[in-house]
Image (cartoon, rainbow, N blue to C red; front, side, top):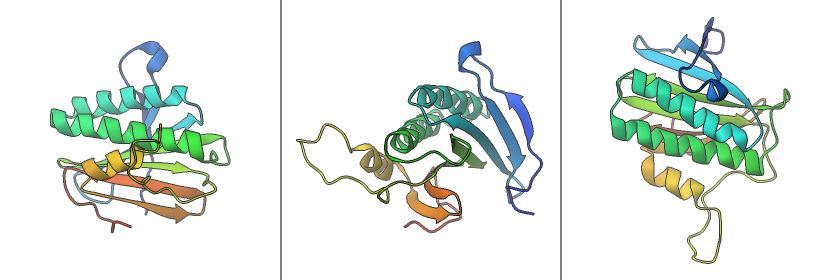
Length: 167
């Protein structure tokens, strides 16, 4: 049974009522592994809502404050890139997952793909944008981009190595 096949339990996150998202939680492949999934509209307003839900969830699990902060920044950057540069999935959403295994958090964003493969922009002082993946790369233990049947999955692991290979 893959993590996609696991029967999720859906519980709303706590916080401000207008920010709550339905987060589906399921067991991951390991004994101590948890996967939280949320689908959001491919809209800039989704970024703050996901950030709030992720921070609320990770903080409630007593993860280190610096790890929660890094996960917040990484999720924000990855989702912002998906909203700005990619197509939504076939249902009009973007999927955001955070996987927790001990003190390691992996954040992944799945979109419908775009015209180019996500990569860090070259270092320059003249660009007004394009620094997001450089920020992700600097914070992540590992990060990468994979393609699946639905589009691109951009992921980053914080706090230690992932179970994937960086690309």
